[in-house]
Structures are given as structure tokens and as C-alpha cells.
Image 1 (cartoon, rainbow, N blue to C red):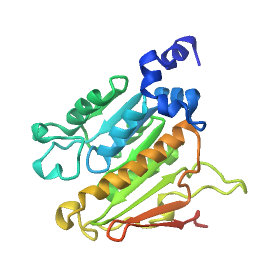
Image 2: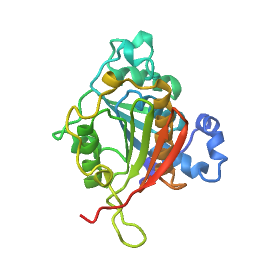
Image 3: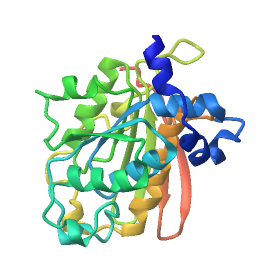
Length: 258
């Protein structure tokens, strides 16, 4: 790391006070907070999951947040997409989210990508970041993000929600475990991408607003752990949340022999 980069990662007096409750944590400390400051995280989707992810990562001191979303804020979003407010209806979501992040933490830089991620732009887009948090609402984007992150060797924290159910897992299929086996990827959970129309959309089936907050907050925690380097990530483990009964279950999965 060059001298300029080291200086940019030094925490200011304001930041030392802002992140004091992190810095006193043995697992984070000053070095972990500096890692957060130097990190670049891409959040796919500024919707129900992206809202808590972006807010908590900004509050935690992640230095640069990229937001990719080509949608605009609509009134029906506000029941769960809490980074936006009524005054932002009709605004591009990336701009609305960037405005909110600026109020949360002026030290966090925001890079707006008001586009749809496609096979043509995904590689160039994701290659600019250290960690990716996928909160997209369709399988095409999820599988594309997983494929590109694996090729680039970037940790991917994947989350999804249904009506009252959610899940989170961390994917690092480019690494090997202690026995030399490759870690599992998204296709080890979903070997075949569901056909269009087989899984109802949020608009069709509905979704409990608070569920996105629960799942998105867990997703943000997984991103922070990856950056700061503490704890045990949800690698090879799918955390499943049932908001009706408030049950949390973990399903282990491994790399397929195929």
C-alpha cells in the first residue's frame, strides 16, 4: 500500500468518535475499522434488502458504496424500502439512496449505477469492488452476479425474501476448504435456474416489510465480517428465516461432485 493510500485510511478525530463502539470491540478495533474505511462494496438493488444493507454499511463506516439499480421510487416501495421516503417518489433509486447515505455518514462515498446489470456490463462493474451484496429480485441477476463474482474471486453475500420467508448465505466458490475442496457456489443450492414465471414476484405475492429489514441487516453483518475479518461467515450454510413463527434454521450444503 502506497503512502497516499495509508493516509486516506487513517481515521479522523470525527471518525474515531463516530466508530468508537466498533473500535473498542476486540474483533474489530482500529485496524478493522480502517479496513471498513478502505473497502469498496457493491450493493445490487436499492430496494427492500438493499435499504438496510446500505444504511448499516454506511453507518459502519464502509468507505465506498456502489449502488446498481435502474428503477425509480414508487409509493408501493415505501412499506419496506426504508432508505427512501415519500418526498423521493418518482426519483431514481440510486439518487434517493445516495441522498440518504449522505445524511447518515458524510465519510462514505457513493457511486451510483442507475442501470440494469447485464452480461455485457457485469464483469466491468463488479471488478471495481471488494465485496458484493446481492439484494436483487430476480434469478437472472442472482445467477449472473454469482458467476461473475466467482470468476473475479470476489466474496458475494446473497440474500432473498419471499412473502414471510428469507435466506442469507455467503459465496466464495473460488476458495478451497482445509481439505482442499472447492467451496460451494450458488448452483450447489439451486442447480437449475427456475424458469420465468415459476416463482411469483414480490408484486404478485406480496412481502412482509419488516422481513426485508431482518434479512438485510443479517446480510450487512455478513459483509462487515468479510471486510473486517472476524467471526464465521455463512459459507456452505444457508440461513433460513421464517418470520411467521420467527424461526431461524441453518442448512449446510457442499460443492457438488459434478
